[in-house]
Image (cartoon, rainbow, N blue to C red; front, side):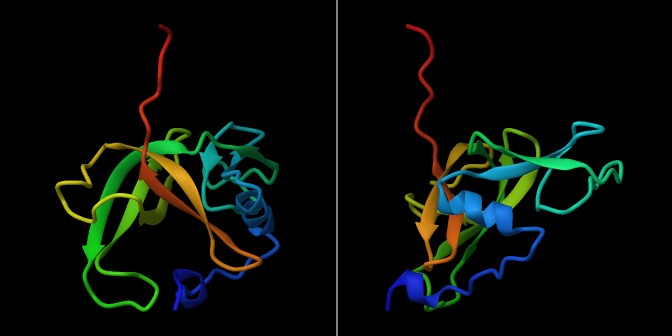
Amino acid sequence: MSERSQRRLPVPTPETQHFWDGTKRGELLLQRCTECDGVHFPPRPFCPACGHREVEAFAATGRGTLYSYVINHTPNPAFDGPYAIAVVQLDEGPRMMTNIVDCEQTPEALELDMPVEVSYLDASDEITLPLFRPAAPVEGPA
């Protein structure tokens, strides 16, 4: 069976629906507090830093670095072979749990602090998951 049909999928709540709507459009949405400018993830109706109830969603760059990971070797019907369960440090500040894709699932390929970028998996008709892959080099001015 395909990965699409085998993964356990999140169930959106009123607080997270905007996030899942964003991933469906190919946008990684984070939240920012309108009082202290703190950026946070996962979505919630208040700022975890100052408690303010005015937060706004914004599109993140989708870039970050590999903060930590574990390579799971336990068989899972949703994955072929070992797979990385990772924490990515987003450029905007928050950390996000995810999977690393499009590279070998070995310690040699998964270097801590390596640049990563978001990619999206249409896991169902309703849910598109944000996954991360090694980032293409950013080109600077010539």
